Image (cartoon, rainbow, N blue to C red):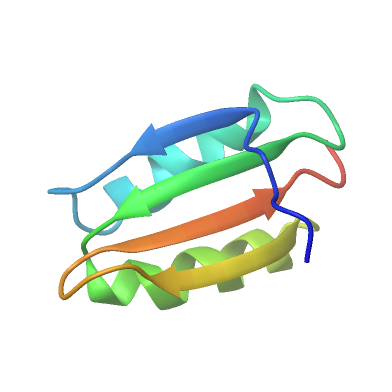
Length: 81
């Protein structure tokens, strides 16, 4: 499988909802269609809510991976403005 290279990365560890979504939404809005955003987070609820919200807003969730005991990495491709 081909490795996906992120065009932009944000680290929102330590933040809780709604700040996790706000930061993620602002980051994806600053990107152009086709670019990939990598989000690193440690808030369990956000690991579920951010992918759902991004899909609801027309973006494509490429992966949601728990990388250790506390952190997740989510890859999202911007599909539309």
